[in-house]
Length: 225
Image (cartoon, rainbow, N blue to C red; front, side, top):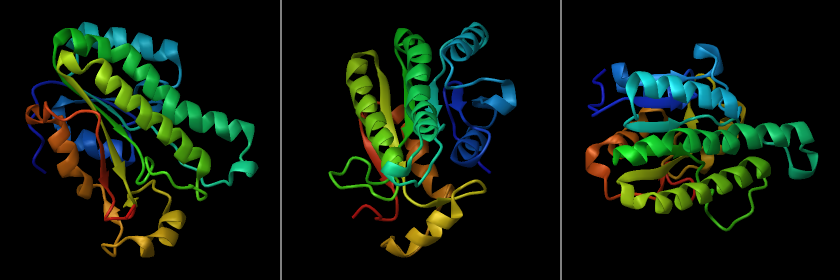
């Protein structure tokens, strides 16, 4: 596999499985992965993220890119969602994104360069009801708002912030039962694979994407149409 050419380290939160693992593979030796199972970093815990950041910056300086691929999924109806599940989805998908940005982005701003990539979900920004997974989509909508706000807040620094919103992407830990139900709705007629995401991610990680920020890029086979 040809690795993506990068000008610096890419820090990937949640890069042990799924899409995050694929990004780590594409980035090769430039990738550094944070997860509970690989190095004990809990992306939902502020102190864990701060400690890991201090160690990372001391060894590597500011990363070229921060890729946040933490994000558990669930399909419970809103009124059947337990308090514990709600808190888990919120902390996993949104709190972790905030903590990573707060800890790492200032170093990138100071360096005057870099790329931040978050993952959303196809159609999350549309003004339609999301009855299939209401809490998950509500939280991802909050993440999209945060992405746009952060992008504008730091735009003059040269650091870009964007979201990639996948549709049905099959991988070893994806939710196959849900994807089986949804596949017939994809206009292109098939589920996607992590390789279908590569071009968009490679473009956003590149030095040539410096005039693209605050965007929500859908890679979904037309699912949101």
